[in-house]
Length: 128
Image 1 (cartoon, rainbow, N blue to C red):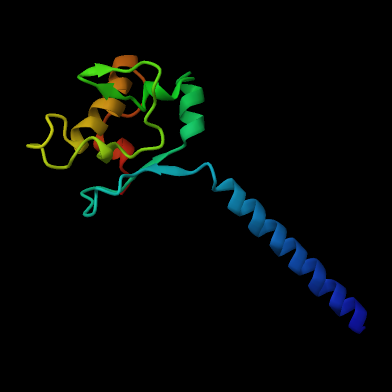
Image 2 (cartoon, rainbow, N blue to C red):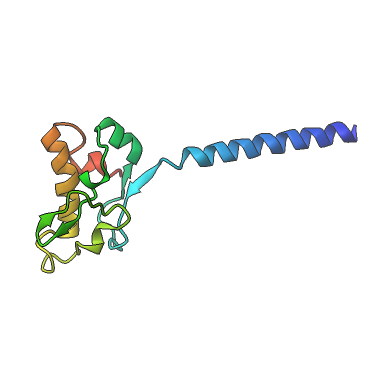
């Protein structure tokens, strides 16, 4: 009886471990659009499935969204994908004509409006 009980515990432990690993891996794709500059959030972060979004939007180049500017000109072959938007854009509107909140809305919502696809209303992006 002791061996059967031990095997049951081993099987249960194995099944639970497999479930935990699979659940953890399925969450890898779930991302949110966040920036550390937003210490006090006015709205919840935007859920964003990066790869799914880019596939659906047929975006192949990172610099379509992750742009780099030098002397007011967009650098076509460069990408800011490893940086936060707040590295260039600040929360204070006086420091930069394109404040952080404004650039997120121009970049994301502006593209959705231009392509007539994707959410554009606040609650469509920011869940309650």
